[in-house]
Length: 479
Picture 1: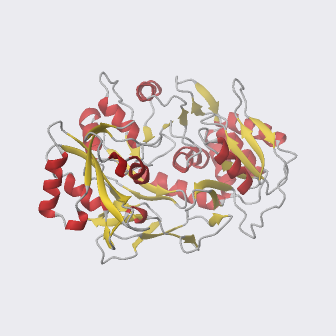
Picture 2: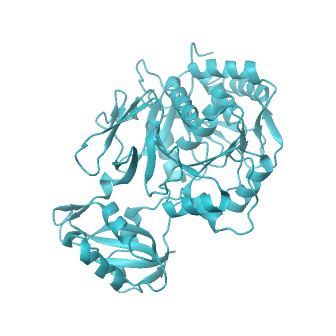
């Protein structure tokens, strides 16, 4: 056993308290694993890892498999570094991650296989020198060049994040988490896996991400906590003939901004508030909206317990923040960036503003549009467009003008009522906004495309709606 590993110590406490209790349920409500079953499976996996030496990197790509806790515990005992990989990651990105993180093996869930298999890779040419702070987990992320890089976490940081989340949200061993978000993502790892290990919070393991199936399984299993993403809540609001959810007491939204319209619609339909949760792979949870009924776009609430959030430019209307806390990671690998992450401090790219006693996200540093040297915050233009009657959603982005490397013009995509036109919206913007803030084009849409996590990419919209679209119909259905 890894000497003094805090997650393993917490796991032993969980076993002693809840050994024969159900730990993992299938989406049908069937018990898939007890806590003691997880312990037994972890020893079996440990035996299969005999050839791997301490310090080796084990990539884990098994989806939401019921053996995730056992695999992670086995790796902790063998002092292996775990690198979670999403099932949907492309082969090229997967191979790049394995090479950059110097993985020695991959744990893979083979089609039709009951138990994940270990696939040995060629030994890494050089072993990483971690110094005194040897990580337990490497979270995969993208750098500024879009090349994958890893974030280094030790067990005490993962445990701190788990405790801060559970204490802030009031999640206990009496709850039942519903696990449809990927465990391989930072959100799923911190809200599903570590609470099971360290706090004995059981969970449902769900592989069916179809919104109607998720609702049916939530009702069938009696889950009490639903960590979701905005795309799920939007789909739930659009459904008819929905089942009652009498056992669900806590709905959480993270991974992308939750619109006030969706939050309000969900509350009216299910009589449950959605609590926005703001975090980052580099530091875990940052802020949490404890109320859930303010229905304000971008609102993320107050810092979670044990986390300090400092506005870097408090005199500005929007500012980056410094996040300090016990869950902040040790840094990036292989190339550190100590100005952004290091020495217990993380500086996200998000721009935040005060909203009463809470904080709200109003944009990102990379979103700022350079219009002939003047800086335009997309959130300010979006807020103005949303004041126009009939506009339900607005996304503002910059697109290159061809008149210089960094010179851009403002453009927007909006969802609006059928009688709203681009001419109406441009006239409305010109009445109040400064000249450089007024969009050159406003594309009135039927849908605005999102990725699998429900996020809207301004960069992708800038590519799709480049100048060649200027002669296209105004009311467009995005593909």
